[in-house]
Image 1: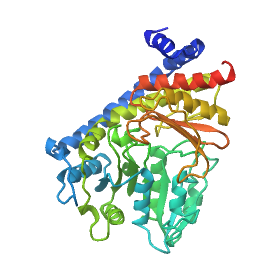
Image 2 (image 1 turned 90 degrees about the vertical axis):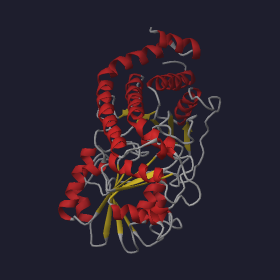
Image 3 (image 1 turned 180 degrees about the vertical axis):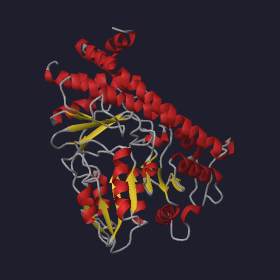
Length: 427
């Protein structure tokens, strides 16, 4: 047993057999971790070049107050995001409170009464259901007269292109793609998957807007959705692109007119991108973007390890450790409420903050089932930092994401698994 595993055993009194499984999993994952390093290096080069071409200087790291008129740091940050994501324009603001908010303003800013949005990737993430209006929320797309159509996936795995194309009508304006799996037991979608679908749509309906929810997917692959033909891309800065440093915020990137309309929805018509004080937002947002390829790589390595480790412990996992990755999320089917709770309890013990907190399930805003969560993160709710969550419903899957270092993820996995087997009397 190496010194790391010896320290882990001594510090947390983790089961020896369990540590042997973790060590075995680490060895099995080595070839796949090296591939992640290649992706990290390519994305780091891309981000560095964007910084240099934008002539970023120390001056741009300072914030503004009040209305934020003439905030060159804010404007340069948006120029950077546009370059990194290969888009005409970007909106990057601390005033965007989440990925759901970024997606919502992108949709609400670009849809009018009588028009339609089609979800090409099946059921959206729980918090987005109320944005679309399935539950008749005040201010939702449905409440404002926008129609919503959902195309179920084929076998809960792949986009049903024939049905999607057949469903498009004169009222259709936006085709929406969710890159990540949300709380569904299915694969997430790769850039190639997105490219194939957008190419098929644009071949017949070139006027349609193809919008991609990029949450959890930034820098996982060597290309981003706009390079696959997306017109508008949205995400959160407390996920991948914030690099674990951005204090808050979200982004939209895409065609100029679409970003402008979203900006008018964020602020007010006639104001748009011209206001929005950055306060203390700029410095960590710039540095976080620069660090993002490395941090995403660490999170990916942790996800690969988690997949193999829990597979060796006998649990179904998705994706498998040797399968290609297109987001940072690792789904583990634990099969019971008690195991989900134990997993979160163990992971919480490995957190740098609030390690003594005992996670309890609760019904949270935007969700339809009670959710159990673990994550003592430096940025509240950050899912690029080590965390896990899942709704307490069949088949009782926990969704692990993030990790600022592979070493920290290893500790978290060991304690999460230890807590499960402690409650069941052994491996």
